[in-house]
Amino acid sequence: MHAALAVVSLLTGAVVMLIFRATSNPTRIRTIRNAITAHVLEMRIYQDDLVLILKALVAAVAGNLRYLRLVLGPLILISAVVAPILVHLDARFARSPLHSGETAIVTVTCAPGIDVMSTAIDLDASYGAIIGGPRVRVPARREVHWQVRAERPGTPTMTMRVANTRYRFPLAVEPGAGTIGGLRTQSALDALLHPGLPPLPPGASIARLEVRYPPARYSVLVWRTHWLVVFVVWSMVGALILKRVLRIEI
Image (tube, rainbow, N blue to C red; front, side, top):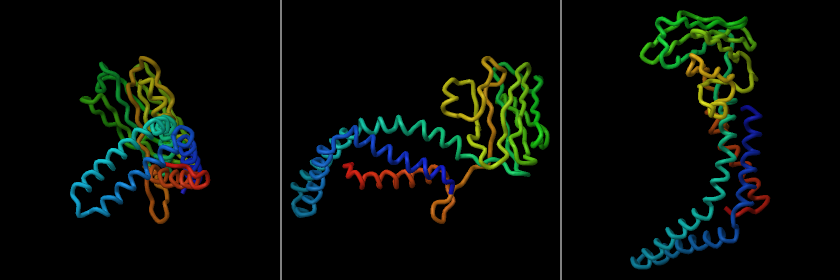
């Protein structure tokens, strides 16, 4: 398993717990939680009395609603902090860099008004990668597809040309390539949501570029799984450790 992913996950879990402690009301949380537990026990003790069971059930549901309202503010703040972390972790850990002999699909979506059948559209690869096979045009979607094959370790530069637009981007062909960019569009928000590829030129003939790398898998005990599962497991470990050390009420 990638050590950096585990460390970031542990730290994120600890930060989440610190934010919750700083923004929540532990006294009220403890009071509401104890009340909910009491109502649940009441339903077990008076299980032959339907009226008392219904009253305890309504009280337990009301207590859960009060609890959710109490933790809503901290959860919103936590979400705002964790969301950018998840975006950048996905860019770094969701895709696996190519190894020698492996292939990736490069897809360009042209801007509206571009006819992919008549417009000059080409993709070139620098030393370390080659274009494997002919391009495939999909006029209905304004798309052109190429298969790119890695030849040797490195970070070859790919050059996309659509009409008068020229766009260069790196191809990750080595372990430890860092952030592996898989998508870029003309959206200004795209730099935050999909880091790793250079921005497209404003007003370019390219509306969208995608590089489909093999998915990365990481170990959790005896399983090989998606990075998000690893993140959830290790962030929970970090949060629980800090919860126990600082005795945080949740």
